Length: 244
Image (cartoon, rainbow, N blue to C red):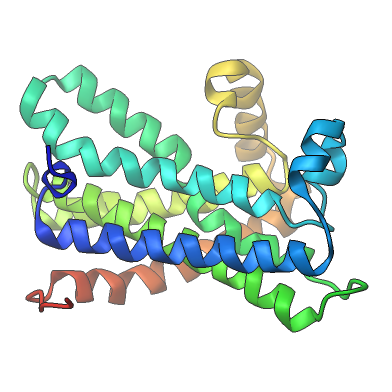
């Protein structure tokens, strides 16, 4: 079966190639950084030095974060086909719930800019390029993923309601970034530790005062994501032109 046939249309296939090329560029930037610093991640792995492997000095945590950002995008690539094939509201609902849990991982990489600082052996501008490159790819994965789901919703509900839900999803993503960056929760905690996660969410909602500063940052991130998605969605809805 040709690889291109896995996609809904040629436009989706081209976008996948572009985001794949961007991911490869990210990995090459990071590999160049490790090579310059003479850091061998495989040696760190086999030596069991996992703290150094995931530490700020290597920036290898960006690879894991980008991997998590790919998950919601890959889910939405199969959403239409699986919904048409099985016509199961339960399956579609589970896919959308899983997608929503992992979606904040895509824009979350923007917050990895807090790790930017001067380090021996590598220029600050190069580290800035590495983190920004990963963050840009993560953001595009999130936008592409959200656009796929919005298109999926527009085929079933009104355009206005789909936009209302889209804005709500962006707000939930901003709150998810707050949970991940400041309270250190992960997407899989929904399955592994749901009660404690739910308890902390309720605590934040009913007593937000102690979290005023990080919640304010979360609100700004939500506004940033929304203002970025509006022109992105407009460009995606225009008549597509041949890129190659």
